[in-house]
Length: 141
Image 1: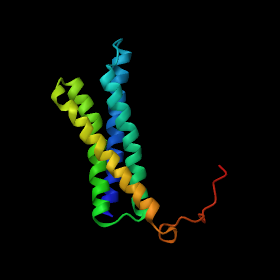
Image 2 (image 1 turned 90 degrees about the horizontal axis):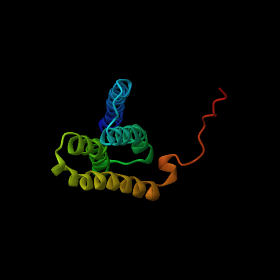
Image 3 (image 1 turned 180 degrees about the vertical axis):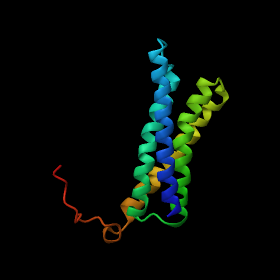
Image 4 (image 1 turned 45 degrees about the horizontal axis):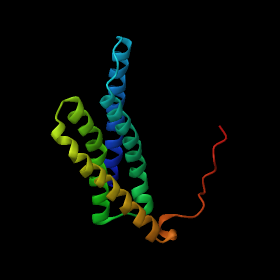
């Protein structure tokens, strides 16, 4: 439960952060300045990865990821979610370019978390994970 709460919470915090950065970008544009590319890149990565963190918060229990694999998926994904945009902002934006090579670490963390989810998806019994039709009807509105 706490792992999925961490994923969802990190996702919503990431979206709030991304929206604050977007608002800052708007003020730069409204003031007649350009928005630096590094700011746009970090903003976009944090937004997409934060949405995916919320989805993962629902997917992890739905697929039946438990134990150490659940902990690994959660920790690796959250590290990558914040690490990728963080190094763009700190490395390029703050001039701490020595951090840029850690992008490989954060990227690998995201890839490993996705591969664990792929493994669990492919090896779980569909009866356990609810792979059949959903009883919910699509909305007409």
